[in-house]
Length: 66
Image (cartoon, rainbow, N blue to C red; front, side, top):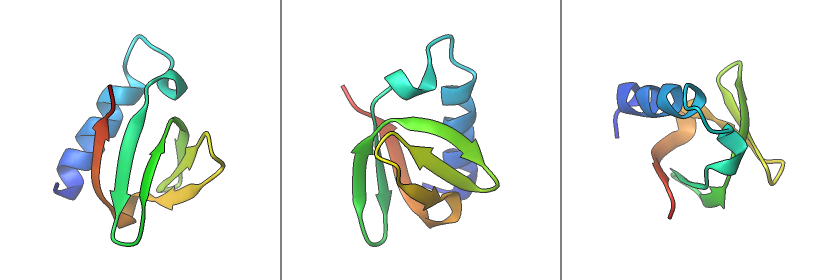
């Protein structure tokens, strides 16, 4: 995914009528894959339910889980 696609996906999540932390996602970086929920997006970093801080610039792929 391109950075624009990732940004658009995150915008869609945060503009959803659902609470963003209730939407399970899979986030892939070059070093690790996270299966979690997102709490917030601040200063170019995603904060997850598992207390991970993931720089958005490190994200290779992000998608909703079923």
